[in-house]
Image 1 (cartoon, helix red, strand yellow):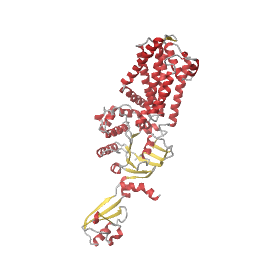
Image 2: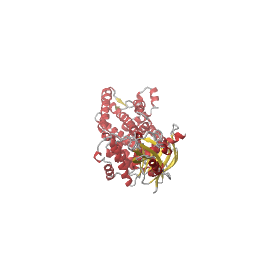
Image 3: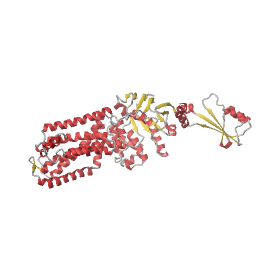
Length: 311
Length: 253
């Protein structure tokens, strides 16, 4: 697939001297959904703001479908839609008018059928003549998305689209993103919620302190980084891990009813067969065996905290 | 030039005006009527004529200018400050529009509103005084230039202001005194010589004088000077806007 967004060595230092982005490199393929994970203050919003033209880069280049965001800003920006983190809407204006405004502002002529289509997809059609201040928080978020989509962009930035949104609406949002993918829209979303990245992203980037620590296919990432746990549930309660099993670094869990074994999925030998043979040889009776994959969250936490531990 | 975007901004701003059309119109009409009652009827009855014009008619150009200047400033400054305040400025900054187009949309709408109100006041004044406009075209041209230049000035204030107090500061502390001391309700020639000299430093004097010339053919300063003054003021505002555009001052970090 073709690269639609290319970020090369992007740096952003604010007037205060704070360096929000320290040489970010990122290529985004057309049609993919990429989630940028990072703690507060990692530089997620600065990255988005710089690509979208809200803040000026200190150095580095960004191109959208080959158009430089500074030299060809008109072409570049008309391909981008942005849903900001904070709800920012003209309170007294009608829903349909703000969406029409966005379309016009991005240089597209008035086309009622396109606006109607967007409003219907976002379940806003019934509210089209309501003033924005009359809408609920969730509905306002939908209006922000409708505005961002009004000019039919090819790249959509969602800056924490589901922050402070209830579970049902969050699922709806994910549905909307899925639908956009079907239309070929590339989506870049930032999030705190690991489950969000896990649920909808094709690739995951981890950003911390202005640097991209890693960008990887979600499944590969989870498989590569993923540790698995094997819970060996017993029919008898133990006080301590038997000496014969000492080499496995087992943890006694569940009040002595379970032996927990951690292993690397990718290792040539996981040691499971040998462990289970040794468990049997020790005379313990198995009640059940359960394996668990560590989540993206564990991976994320270990990545973000690593530099601090080593440095 | 992204005309679609300019039109979108213009229409969106005008929609704000029409949403509150009643208060947009009632307040200038009411205040103008009050001025006519107080200055025209009550005080004016004791003043015969100023430079050959009845006092009631004499204050019409000044009244229009007073309102048009304050409206131009407040509309444009509020128009661009409000998106900054509520956060919707993100959309303007991320849109494929140049700063010039943003200025044209906002200043165009603000100037239109000011012009609209100026004309409403002119119409209202026909109910109170006999008016015979000698140079209607010049009058319209002066009105238009004033609306545009003060809307530009307002736009700069709106970009500069970082809170509502600052937004009010310049109109209240600078513009209102300059307009009142600029000969809105009197001829500069009625002042003692010292104050006449000081008044020459007030740019508003030139605008009101030129505007009054278009009405009655009388002037405090030569019409060419008036034209030069308004051209200078407009150029200064354009220069400031260009500088803001170049540096991204207060809008784009």
